[in-house]
Image (cartoon, rainbow, N blue to C red; front, side, top):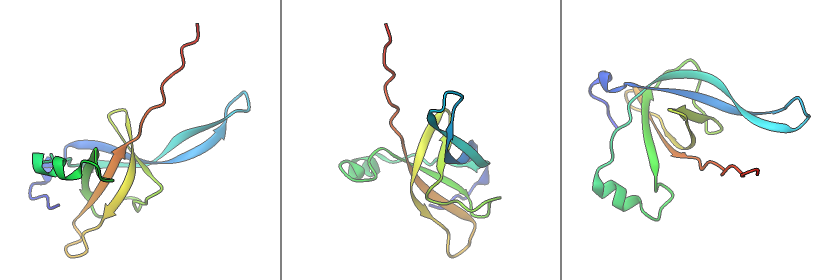
Length: 118
């Protein structure tokens, strides 16, 4: 997905790796260790793209476009944090021709429902 106007990269995202640590009670908890942050574009999907993705792996996916070269290399075991939502990386599409922008397809992870304690 080509970006012709870099000013469209107006969303700040962070790349993180899940880290398992024990809390003060000795219980293992998974936290996200932020590796780096960068600016991204989030192109809107057209209706025909949304319809075509229904029932596929790409249903409810989001596309992030970032600059190809970053402080760290983007890898599939990372997650994306954006506006208090955690996204699992589904596909990384580097620009093999111009090496300018990279497209990342990700899905928002479902949040576990909190149990009511009464």
